[in-house]
Length: 160
Image (cartoon, rainbow, N blue to C red; front, top):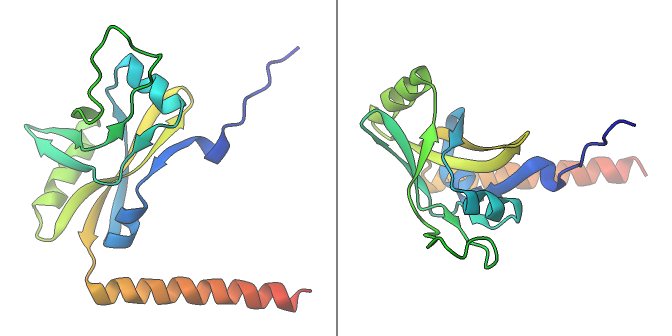
């Protein structure tokens, strides 16, 4: 008999940074691996991660994830002192790092994490090169979102 795949809820998504999509224009996306400890992986399997106030620091040609909060499980690590907001190294190819560093050096651009998700058995972090939105941009995107919702309602009602 063949093994059946376990379907992951939310399509393998562990944590989303919804605030980043509201605060920034997303210019370019990258997929990065993360260097994690064993207790962190167990906590991520339980879905105990937050990306809300996290950001990415580029230092010495490497990328680091700051401020991501991974809550340690009570039962997972009794012998290790767990730091939930420790700095985690992001694993990227050299060409991708060069693109990100060149983008961040431009005025108005920064790099933020968008999501943590599973890709097979590995934890990946989706990061993006972003540009900040002004208040009127945020209002315009909310207006577009509301209009899209209204269109969906109209189509649904017309098809009844």
